[in-house]
Length: 79
Image 1 (spheres, rainbow, N blue to C red):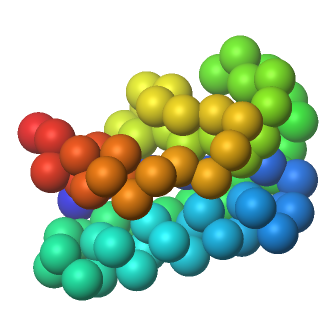
Image 2 (cartoon, rainbow, N blue to C red; image 1 turned 90 degrees about the vertical axis):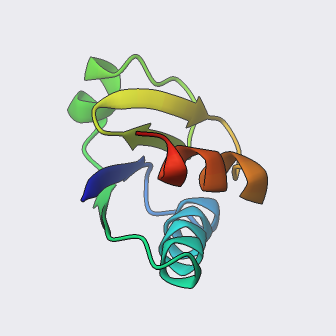
Image 3 (cartoon, one colour; image 1 turned 135 degrees about the horizontal axis):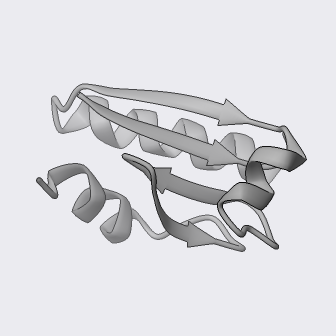
């Protein structure tokens, strides 16, 4: 199972990002654990300066905007 962290303040874009990732995973029948992280110290550990940011299996994949569906799909199928 993939662990996906959505880093952000809890703003609307951050919430939409987490919801979108969960929805796409469910549509693809891929098990994921989506965790919302609002702690600024954790964000700094990943070097995130703008949110929402997405970390997949401890690797920063995206930051600064809601990711595109194609990107999310690629992260989910990546080994």
